[in-house]
Amino acid sequence: MFSKIRLLLLLFPLLLFVMPASGQGLQYGLQIGKSYSHMYGTFVTTADEDINVSLSPGLGSRFSGGAYMRYYVTPAFSIQPELLFSTRGGRIKEDVDIRGRDLRIDGNLMMYYVEVPLLFRLGTSIYFPEPPRYEPSGYTYHVLAGVSASYNTRAQFNGNLRGDVFGVDFDEEFSSSVRSQFRESDLSVIAGAGFEYGRVTRFTFDIRYVLSVMNISNNSSGNGDLRNGTITAMIGILF
Image (tube, rainbow, N blue to C red):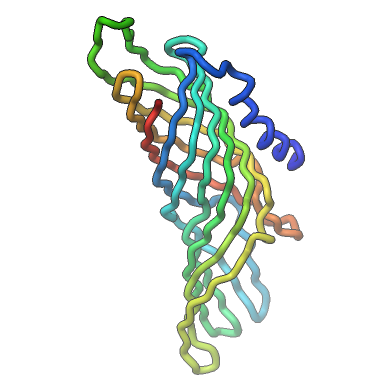
């Protein structure tokens, strides 16, 4: 499965060369966005006579951005491969009880992905007559759906550890690499909608939801099943 995803990461950008290199049916764009990411699934917990551990995931603010190409099959339907750099993860609160002594970890999990979405876009269209006639700028609206293959380049957990151990209070900041705890590849489905304004060069906006369809946990015991879920608002420009 993971070898197939790596192959998709390599093949998707080749659409830039397979599709026509010129003509009215091809445009390029840049986009940047704010993401709100969370993790869901089965979190590993530990409970025995001496130690109890529980995890509580929360919503975290993230970043996404990159470039894309749009090829118009018809004035209303287009195919849009993208190359993005995105961050995922979430806020993590972890309560640890060691022989009646409470510890609290409050941290921020950041996972950095190179992402290659392939989107299918259906929208309204505006008729642009040939010069010398002029048509004013206008709005178009669209929905989109597709799939995305991602590669995890880095995962970092930054947090605060505080508690009381044997009568000693402490409060410390820490940072640790946790990439080994997550699988390198992820496969997601995407759905969204948005609008654009302009004529040939247009300003774009869309909101999309990206949902993992694979377990991203690399827990060797096999009792953890985690997925990424991300809501992203993207603004951009299309040339």
